[in-house]
Image (cartoon, rainbow, N blue to C red; front, top):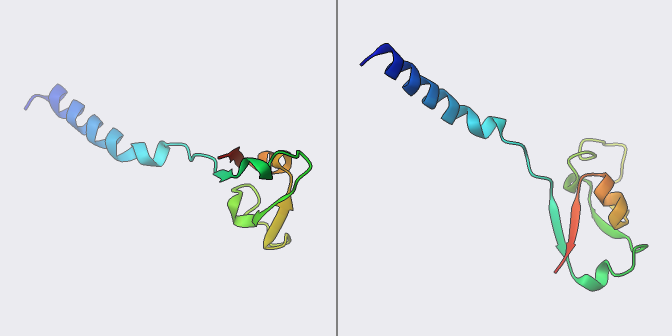
Length: 81
């Protein structure tokens, strides 16, 4: 096997193995009934582990009740069914 071909194969193997590690994590998406988010002031309660931004903050309560806008600020997308 030529040196160029060996390098190409090695590069393909290394790139293929590293791809999952380099892939960005998708933000969490929560789907709720449309009537739940019809009122912008409505609060939706979920575990703090739902948000990757606040999951490790142990000073917060286990269950957090926030508006759709506040959850969006925490990195959680809420969509209607």
